[in-house]
Length: 71
Image (cartoon, rainbow, N blue to C red; front, side):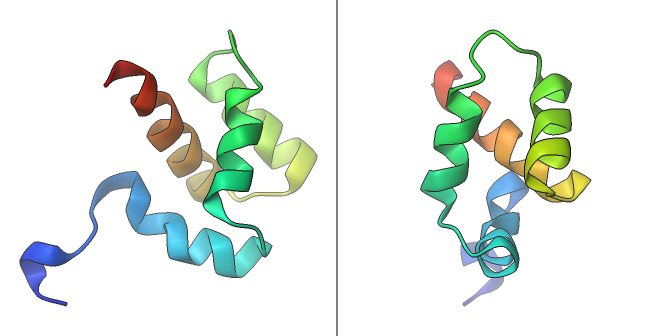
């Protein structure tokens, strides 16, 4: 993969998230979407406390999922 083809931003965490937690990204995004009305950091805290995700992984999932709403 060339430098210009590398995934950047929150999605760059996705392969590690899938490997570490054994679930596809779509699984985690459904959980994030179900937290409708909560602030970004509230959802991050929820993922960390309820599902044991690390801060960086939780933050990446929330950022990428919430960005879908803006596009």
